[in-house]
Image 1 (tube, helix red, strand yellow):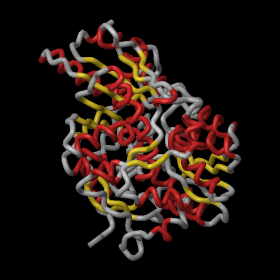
Image 2 (cartoon, helix red, strand yellow):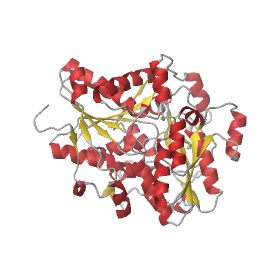
Image 3 (cartoon, helix red, strand yellow):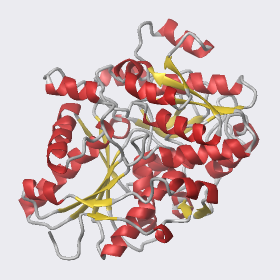
Image 4 (cartoon, one colour):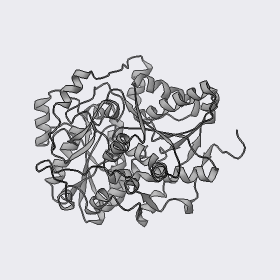
Length: 456
């Protein structure tokens, strides 16, 4: 072990960030506004408040304030599981025989098993503060639904979760954790909503997608008094709350006197990646430092690497606002064999703008290679990683091996956003040699792109 560099670095309680960081404040090119799907005009705060909590709408539309105070009640909740450790992967470095120094920010030290709790408690808090009875949401692999059910139980709110059908069936124990915390969990698409019935008519036998589940959750929220819709990724407000990850990481590196060269995160809708890179990206935007950022997405759902940068519906049922983002089309439904929770057809508008401005890179990886990396990491570092996080592990290993070839001593940081104990069906398929790699064809994507809305 290197002198004075511990395996794990924690911040002291008084060193924990007291504010979230809003990267949009430092962006020269701001993310394009959400558009009303009927008028194609920018959504107003009043219009958004019919779907989201008022305070969250203010955060969603805020492009000016770089720092936003974290309410004391949320800070008190954070203290139950934060700060999370910044870990030096010494064992992995040794096995790889690489000169690279590898660190990961581990967000799995809470019952929800992931980083999602950082935003869940914030959104539930603002819903409670507004006097609402409950919230609705969607979940893919189940991490977000689990986190939100925990936050709602803590604050005494009702929680209605629409879970992507393939995950509902493959991950029954994740579903039962949500129910234990008091949430109702419905497989999506379902017969309980009008939009769900419509999707089932058009796609009989579909295994669902996040876009489908979002449509159902929004319908219920807007047709049930005292409820609002909350989302676990994609939106600006979520990236804001998740900036706690990057802020803690940056503070821990400063404590060690170390600076990362490469920062890697998995990318589905953008919550983990956006939260991890936020303060480092802020330095890059202000010209104070430079970093290489890599977004890693599944080859089966490649929004960045094969998507179009265009306005699109945020949901399959086409009831949500239009967002300008890298998208595969709101009608795109990933293969049922897709093993992770990175099933969203589009990408955060904030991250999409940063990617379009060439401030970060993106790569897509096949899931068998992802699980090879996950297995190697579990055997060496002792943590069974979530399939989503394992995308970042795959590329972190690849970058470390490039350093071995060149002799460069790069410092690599990746986000380990959660544990994989509820993803054992996917691990079983990998271990039994039954996992395959599905990559959509150009023809399949062209068909999905054809459904993109026409926006002037």
